[in-house]
Image (cartoon, rainbow, N blue to C red; front, side, top):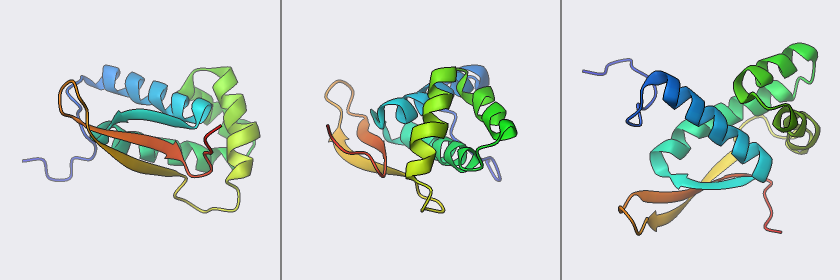
Length: 121
């Protein structure tokens, strides 16, 4: 029984899962929207929301906390300079999940995970 066991395993070991989620969170911050599966999006959503909340503090400790997860200075810079100030008026709920239906290859639930201020260019 999985009582009090948070998070989804996503068919990966812990190191692979942590690396995948950090990479995908960075892609959401960098591009504003990614296409993925439903369970992955539900896991990434919490990570991105926490990173944006940390980035709204905008001090050295917050930058180091974000850099420990994201591992890429350019994405950390974009998070602090572009994404967090745009979402400063919100307290939470920085991302949304838009369902697209089943994926053609394997029938998995395909979704868009996007920032709420994302606009199609």
